Image 1 (cartoon, rainbow, N blue to C red):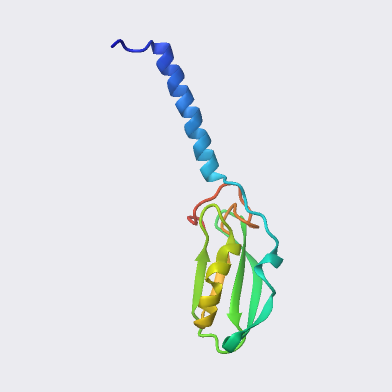
Image 2 (cartoon, rainbow, N blue to C red):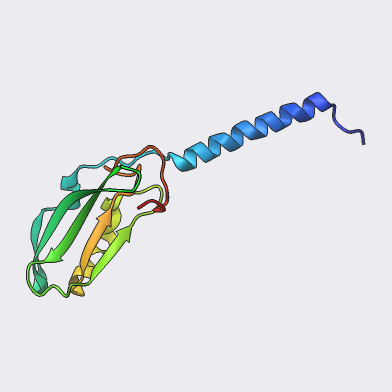
Length: 133
């Protein structure tokens, strides 16, 4: 067959480039999950034989100057000092920690969950997949 006209090749390349850039933009800036801190549960609660659990909510600043929101759950008494650091995926937030919170607390561990850059309640425009956290 014949090669397509040069102008058509250029047009096809431009369309492919536009779609590629759009896909990359969506990956770097996915829709942000918004929630309230109250959705993380009460700041203190009784948890069976473990006793009382306290949640502390705080902020830290990453190397790029963005405020990151995080929460730490730990037993008031008898805490082993071990902490699981929970990092969500690129399209999520720290609120998803509820899936692993109970088994970790039952094992005597503390749990720290972070909203990474541009996710949840943390600052930033583009997700970094934890690279700058």
